[in-house]
Image (spheres, rainbow, N blue to C red):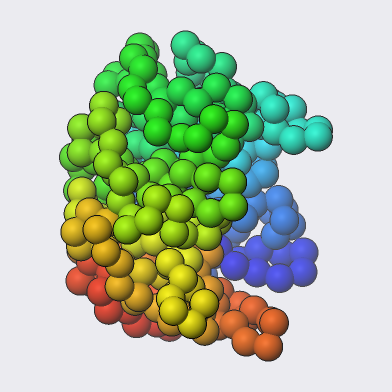
Length: 302
């Protein structure tokens, strides 16, 4: 999703990015919805902070009434999940997790054993749901049945600090966490759904505190920004193929990554901007078809 001024714009590809075509966007300003997720070619969601849904591939959109701003939304195994901030001042102190079958607007609150607060996160792997309660509680909850029941797993996060959790695209029980330590961040990986964790960076706190992670498997992952090199500048994005024992730059420090993710274990996408002289250019879409080793820009027309 892109756009400027008061109108947003959406383009869609059905051939892996060779061609794009414009489709209608929700009839609101570009600051009302900033992210997109689709569960299938017809059923999609535009969100952050409002929530709009389509069941016809974007030909029309309907707004969903929510108890607050939608900050995160993901889709897997026929279910959509969303985090909603129900109190926004001075920060998002109270959070609710909502769930709806894809293709419907039957959103219901998922009751979690521990209440959710600022910094709450979740990750999906098929029917498996993993929820980090937030920096107030430092609890990782696991549900094998779409939130009907939960058990606690090991939370490796530092008390009072945020974690960002992501599930590997391999569909296994692999989780990666970007754990803030105060001034820097460290990466951790679990290959058993959060029962045990292993440090996944040469130094536990070798990354910038804004660390983002995207994982293909228990051994292959992308990190942005990358660790700082000897010249003091972090790579825009780095890649590990050995579960975090070492990382190699895949995008130079002259670029900035705002988001990256795997659609499967081989194909990855990233929103990347050129940076220089203290300025940052517009985001451009990059694609990798070899697990994140090599990247090329995708030309978007339409």
